[in-house]
Length: 339
Ligand code: FAD
Picture 1 (cartoon, helix red, strand yellow):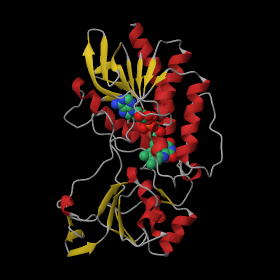
Picture 2 (tube, rainbow, N blue to C red; picture 1 turned 180 degrees about the horizontal axis):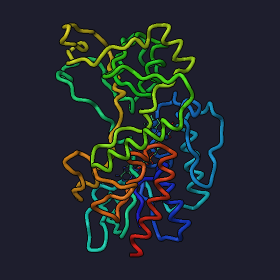
Picture 3 (cartoon, rainbow, N blue to C red; picture 1 turned 90 degrees about the vertical axis):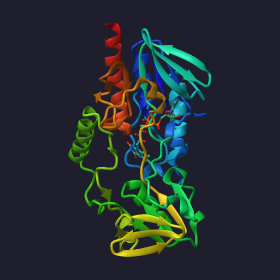
Picture 4 (cartoon, rainbow, N blue to C red; picture 1 turned 180 degrees about the vertical axis):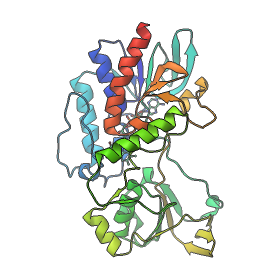
């Protein structure tokens, strides 16, 4: 059995494969443990994350004020060592094709064959940049949230933050501490003044589940639970930082423009906090995408290819969802292979 990816979802699957006594290997493209967490911006601390679930069988400990990137990289490394998980890295899977009794995986390190496959490749390597007319003409700096350095880098520049999710909000508030900002979101932001509501969380997951079952692109589960109103956010609101503008229609050499009413805004930097897409290009040779643009998935099982499970995808794209998906995928896959 092969698991592709050693983030939360891949490690959870590995844990359950090991407990079941299965023969397996985890192939991971990164040079070091930590999944996508190791690459997240330095100001994202554990206590500013949205709630991080422990991996099965070993709790995450440490200082809540620590950077999530270092804390999670250390935790994943400890986890792999503690359970002696067979993780091979850096091994990037480039293409997955069908064989008579399973799959062949082309990697930079040779070809692997397997009867069953758990795909846990996350989204980090597929930052989403929306298309706008004139984007190539903009002479300022454009970067995606995935490349965010630190707020101080933008001192004295006018930064336009695009995106209505939690990452956009957090980065906006940080950058506004050091320089002038403008916020653009497609829809008016939805604020959450109360604590996270588990029922709302479950409803959000159910909605994404419905989408993937219908073969639609999943959308994000972590972004549909509303933007939390923290003290920091309240202060930013009082300073006018959160007065958002609607989506612009085009980019210009010096900024962005709206058509109705016609106006332009000059900025130095455009920060695209516009999310990510599932990193599934290596599965393209299997031709799993349906006209809706997604892959039809029931739970974690790919309906057109029952020996392939997607974990950390769609409804399981959160740390808690990834944990559960790893367990479900392994149980079902082992049952399928046992016939
Ligand atoms: P990842 O952690 O991305 O791991 C994927 C792994 O697959 C990587 O190690 C990568 O190297 C490897 N890989 C990718 N492609 C290949 C390939 N072709 N071949 C081999 N290996 C490959 N969730 C929460 O529950 N709480 C939070 O607070 C929270 N905060 C978030 C903040 C941000 C900014 C973002 C973007 C997401 C956040 N999430 C949060 C979501 C959460 O991080 C993920 O859903 C969760 O960690 C599951 O990760 P994963 O294992 O699916 O993917």
